[in-house]
Image: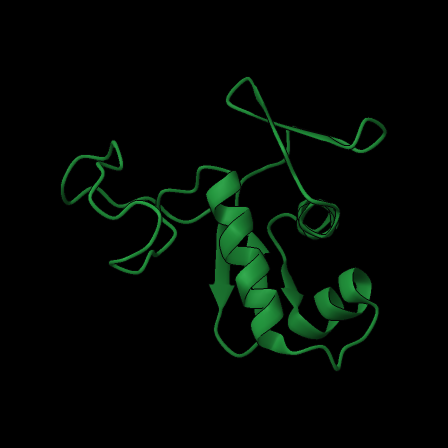
Length: 113
C-alpha cells in the first residue's frame, strides 16, 4: 500500500523505507498499474529528463523490486540473496510485480491496494 501523504509504503503489513526517487517511481508505476509505462516517461517524470542514462532506471527498478519483496526479480549469483534461501519452492515461478517490457519500459502487474 502506498500512502502518498505520509510518504510511506507498506508491504505485507510492514513499513518499508523508500528513498524519494524510488517512491516517485513506484507511485508512477502504480498510477498506471496494468499498463506499460515507457522508459522515456519514467525518466522524464522521475528524473526530470528523458536523456538520463537508462541504466539509472534499471538500477532503481531492481532496488524497488527488492524493497517490495519481489522474489521473482532476477539476482546475480553474487547478489544480496547469494547463499540464502529465497523461501520459494524449487521450480516455483511467479510473475514479477514489475515486469520489464523489452525495448519499451515497465509494467506494474499487481493491482494497487
